Length: 80
Image 1 (spheres, rainbow, N blue to C red):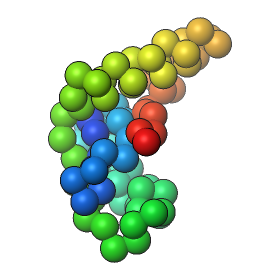
Image 2 (image 1 turned 120 degrees about the vertical axis):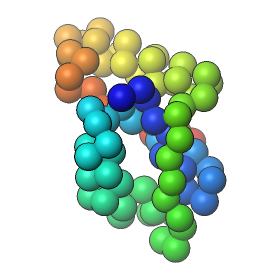
Image 3 (image 1 turned 90 degrees about the horizontal axis):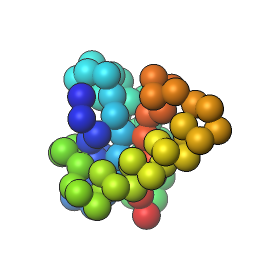
Image 4 (image 1 turned 180 degrees about the horizontal axis):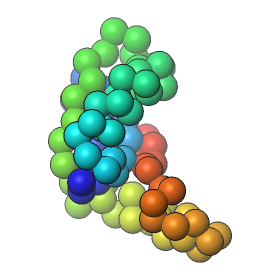
């Protein structure tokens, strides 16, 4: 899958790259506490990452690679 932005009440929370829809749904389900930390009653949705969000994700991936990490072990980056 392409990098996907997770939204809380339509506000970007993080950009992740799941392997498939099953991975994405599992992340949303298991990461609910993290995702809703600042807005416990928020609504979680997702969409394709924008150019700006994609750039942040690519920069974080480049940092991950710089220390020797591989693409398979990099999942995502929080947005603020």
